[in-house]
Image 1: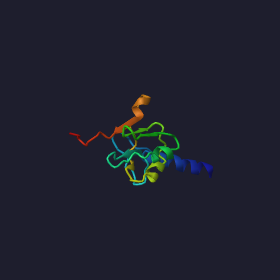
Image 2: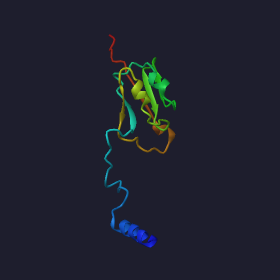
Image 3: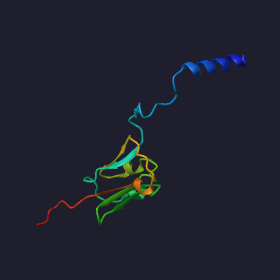
Image 4: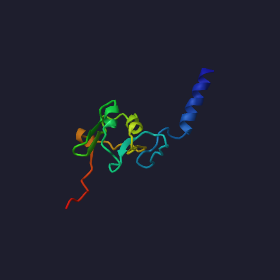
Length: 120
């Protein structure tokens, strides 16, 4: 009886398709609830720092004086807490993962809001 179960498994594995995707040729389809990476709409941001205080891994840094928002994607655990706490909803969780990097500095993304008042 045991050999019949083993034979059935072997035949199923030989005749079935691969369990994984052939990645470069076939791209994975992400669902709506996939947590990938945090993105920001810097023009909506009020630089309150709520997201950086809520982040459990301290991956987000907000500097109100220089109007700068920074995330270390290598520290981010994609928990979505920063997106939930943002009062103006300028943060969003994209369903695409961050690109792979070979150096630690490549994972840090800095977004700065330039002064657009145009003082004359």
